[in-house]
Image 1 (tube, each protein chain N blue to C red):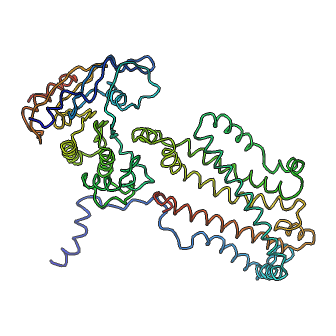
Image 2 (spheres, one colour; image 1 turned 60 degrees about the horizontal axis):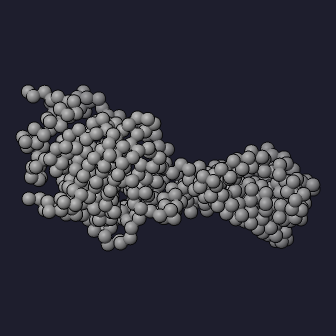
Image 3 (cartoon, chains in turn green, orange; image 1 turned 90 degrees about the vertical axis):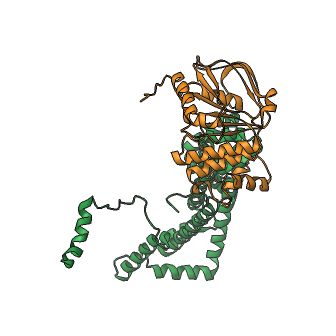
Length: 280
Length: 241
């Protein structure tokens, strides 16, 4: 008798009502360790496996170890460090100018109606023109030296930063504006304590787009009358059929893109620690 | 009787012929109202009767609204909204101190509303009731002569609301500001306020002084009479049985 009751007990519970089934969770769940590196690592593994199996034409796609060996050779020869430094310098200058311009224009346009009337339409117009299409004109205006390259990178960077920051600024909740009025905040306090922190999430989206944009512009620009830089190195390699050198260039671009994006994300997470969203 | 009776001579809020209209629709139609210093006033009315419009006018928040009339209010006015309106990017203490300094005063205000120890919390970590307590602390810290509250407990659950009623009454007793509490809840009005105004078609239709000691119970039979009068004025008849 006792044995039957113990075995029957779960069935009795089940009969009393529907057993509660845990609902399907809709959040993506716990983050995998080193999640951002997993995809690239799988790609490299596939590449290495295919090369080792002899499935890839080494003239078109050399093996990963060939690329690394070439990178080492270029590094010791001294050309790779020079090229990287030149590229970094261009990207940094262009990025700094674009960042400053994007933020200042967004603030001017987001905080005053006159500024909006003057700036917003103009930037939208600028956005509609493919920036790389401006290269010929900029070469005519600024000469074919460094200046036009930095100017183009600055334009590539400032547009996403402006757009996202401006959208965030004009999207500030009007209830917070009312609160600021009630609390007697001055205009400067209002901007510093409500507008700027409220617009930061949008600014960071723009910043991440801008950072990768600066690298993107670089590839194209360094193929035009450059004597050093990663793009130049790759362009030369194309002339001599050195696909391994081209891959070294792409590798460096990729690493820089990933590192700079991660750096922005890190800062973002620190600054926006009050946000608890899907990513946390 | 009440500690504030001797101040009754000098009104804190003085409204004469206040008119407000939106797109040709008259919302406030010549309001005359005096609120003595230290009086706790509740403002009742149907939704859309102009309660919030009146409160926003007294708060000086009605920009781009057509209207006329004279209005005087004290210098230090605090407003509590229906939502706590805490800035999500500032910790609770920094929210309380928004627009003023004095960390110690902020801590004291938080302790007074029962949020001691939560100074460093983010607003996103607070419950609805806690957030509204923090909003009360933010309004207190400015030592208001007039406290305007626009349905401050409307979004809270019934239990939290009862606790908040007691808290608001305590705070009023300790700091003696004039209070104008906008609400659509008749019970809330008669349990809290010393005077209940009913806004009807842009005018003050009923001005009721509720002379019952505090703390009041919902079951007080005399309050039941007030409730019936107010509900009748609102056009709601309660079944007597």
